[in-house]
Image (tube, rainbow, N blue to C red; front, side, top):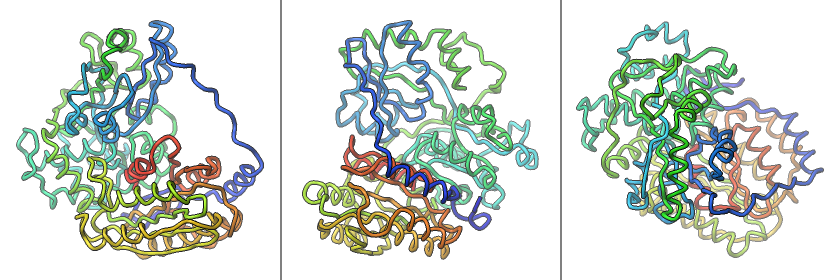
Length: 536
């Protein structure tokens, strides 16, 4: 596995060039499969807007249908995205996230008609067993966030953690460290946020992601180059049981406090109160609480269901969640613009003829949002960051444009953000679709950037509404990549399906680069671009 210079940069997946080339050929020769459509919703159907980590509850759906007659249908979202969706208005009957605080902070408290905690999982630190022994942390209940920060600052602890602006686990860790340095024991205030102290801790972050589940998968791929991971206790225990780790993770519960997710099931639709109460009673029954503990490694939320041996019996210090949106904004602003490693983001954007009209206008709106126009909660946290380099490569029959921007300041009226908007607003559509020619150019530039500064998070966003019909072939693209050497393996592509783009081809690109595919056919391009920002 190729890695960055020791102690620097972000670890990513190695290319499998031959496999990818074969898959692309097979994709070109086969059509997309058909998918069975769900039956129409009935009176006992409950649609649930849920955190992405709750996808592990799918095996429970059939049991609940059999025992209660309730048909559960999940739609997954990030914590902040879900909160904003609820505030704007949603057709979902229920919401189910790690906590309801994000909804409250976004101004949606009145939307939640009832809430009941279902299960518990604290956000803790997983450290490789051998390293935990070396540090003297095994069996030591006095490890603190400051001790972990000191090891990170010394370069001895390189860890994976989600982006706090996109995922509850990352934000919980940020709250934990900031609260530890404040040392007051009460809810953190803005004046207590010490960027200088926090910088030591975040110097050790070597892998990021937009969700706890994606982070866990990425850790498995890159485990030999990392020392541990911050995630839910349930995720870390599941990884230890999975047989996928070369070395188990020792779970550290910082003495100075942690944040625990209590996964409240929240009622949004008053017409479904009876069904909601029936579901809550089922989920909080001893049998289901035991099932959740056994199968998902989450703690029971109901008294009288004893913890089994996998969970330590020690009393955990629970930290207060920030009580105002101002504190959340200040914490996330400090992380994104001062604490996280700077980034170089390359946007490879389709401006072919099929993008004419509403499609290119949607693209302009999405990019303008990232450049400071979107003042929603999620818009503020997903905009281009201080110290970020942004490259925009446009393509039609060939590469049309190539422009670099250095973001200096996050004020929407700053010269750098204004320049991005001016450039994007001047785009026009026409011509064919040369996806791989544009990707090849993007990777050439990205490799140069990664080589010059391996401490940056370099990534590519590919957006197209069609299939390749001009310029380089997939095979030539792969040959170009092989010619770029191992540095190309450090750079993921986040591919966006738009219009008539080939899901199979874009999924192959994302999978083989350690990236991810995003589907804008059921969500606006602006929403998808904001979601991608959580992975960068």
